Length: 200
Image (cartoon, helix red, strand yellow):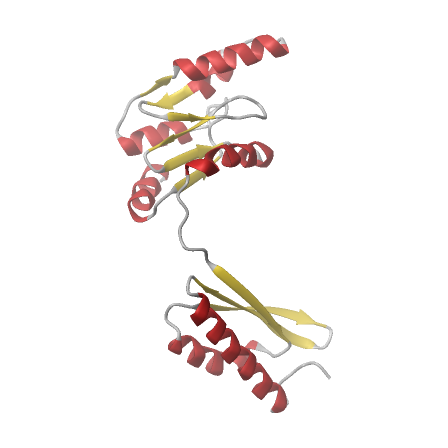
């Protein structure tokens, strides 16, 4: 499943990130799956071996075979430094393989960030409204039909006075995003004037 997912995603997206599955136990199979996806062998990377052996000497622990599993990398990988617990991640092609522990993953991601080429930023606007989704459905879909470069989603919530929704607009086109937001706010004003609001 991991191999199939990687091969599908790495051909569709600029970057693919995995988190977890690169630890010392038998169920840590991400590195093996990445090697299979890229059709390359996997073995102990001498650079990773040196990092781990040095670390375990420093902390007075044995570099057991289980711990040294974390030095196994697909052939052709580049290491991703791990400033927290030293066991490196790696990247190969456009796939970046990070640890699953949140603190370690974040530190690795900060190491990776300078390697990434940024695109056009995605703008996001959230408009909270105290109108039930049933009343928003038709007019909101009409707005969506006019803006093919703006994604509009409705996420319901309930309050003491009734139902409402967070309307989330996303686009890489700031002008269209702003226009769509204006239409959403106008729709809300019209529905409120028609008595659809749950706020009294």
